[in-house]
Length: 185
Image: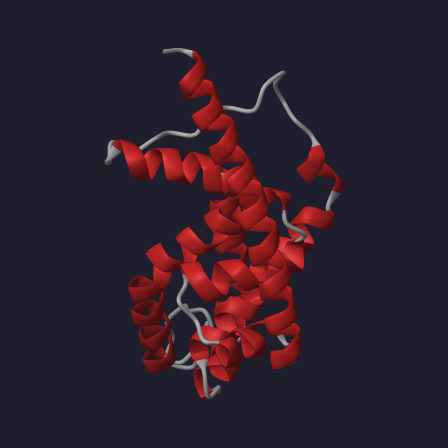
């Protein structure tokens, strides 16, 4: 119970309002980032929920940070990495992974996503985090370094390696796809 007789979370009402306002505005982007990191909508939900819980518990410190988004992205990436370390994350409950729902958009975008997600999953977690934050979240090198708690040089080298791996993987997929189309005519 609070001093005024009401029950609450222990956070001052104005801080809680700021937290709710921040989360409301950023939730879709956080979910998209988590999905691009892990490639599974349900795991992305878990990562975002864990991130928002940690953010709530540390909101006073986060609100005082120079870059709140960087603070939150650091939490998100750490939650993703922590989740990948847990043994249960490697357990499959079915013989095949469930199909992810596809939103009806342009066929080309679906094809591109279908090519991109396996290529992203093939990257080591550090490279994947850098590529997702830099290019899918449109963060600067400096903001990415701050969010990941590493040097600008590390972000640049991880980014270069990740992009080279993606280009090679996507180039090979496109060559296979075009070769397959040529043989069916």
